[in-house]
Figure 1 (tube, rainbow, N blue to C red):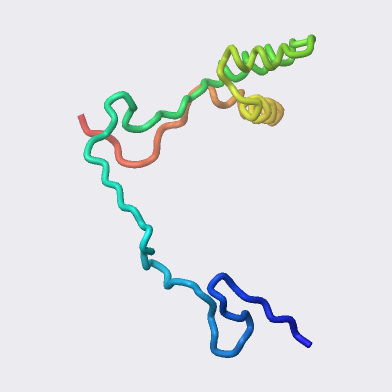
Figure 2 (tube, helix red, strand yellow; figure 1 turned 30 degrees about the vertical axis):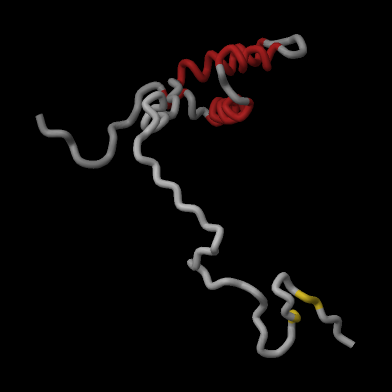
Length: 116
């Protein structure tokens, strides 16, 4: 004998001809609230910029992390430099593969050149 399960709307799941109590996609419910922002907050920047680290900086931080001997030194280094452990692990891998040695000069950008 098959078990019958009631859904949220009381419809029996699996019963022929029933689809449950779901709304159609895109239809707003009675509790939908629309909020419009009339002005941007002047204290917030329009868009946050990602930090860009030079190869020299990455190598210096990786070498400093390798020199850490005591417990908590790496954490203190990361806090002081405002970095995450993921930065350090990626930079270790880049150094291991030799990618940091080639990052000293940036390759020319692709795309349209700016006419002067």
